[in-house]
Length: 205
Image (tube, rainbow, N blue to C red):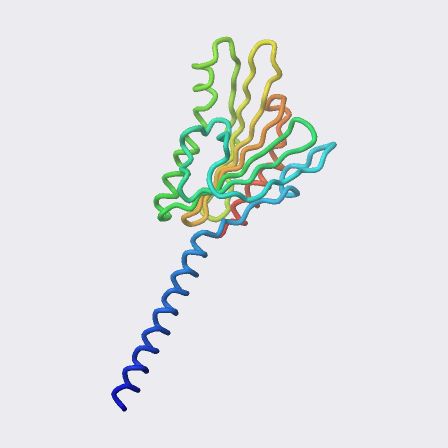
């Protein structure tokens, strides 16, 4: 009789331990699946005649990759959020949780080089086009951030200007791309530098 009681107690203890392990595994998986912190519409450079509208924070990459960054953002560990206005101005933020801080630093470097080469790459594939770019410098936030601008134009079409903010906090990298019609003289660089700082500060590494 005592033997049966001991066996039942041992079985109950094993079941409790297994259940606890299952809960811990589920909690860890849920935490791993949680999105990094993202910008809100109010964090973007103010539009003179329209509020910003923010889409949902969505797992994976956007259906259309940000301009200049086609093929360099990994799908694994990625989340994104799109923003729009009532006019021609839009933005997107993509954040990636890398395997390690070293992997994140490597990704951030790749993104910076891709943006810095964007104008030249675009010109090589766009006969008759005009393009230019500007390095707007680094930001002292977490592990650092960098802001760039790219302008492109083709004959008989409206010119476009894009700003890019690329930053890292630990093993998480974020890139914010803002764009509208115009050239680099129309870019709200000072406000976008603040946006990039906020984007990095909001990450959950």
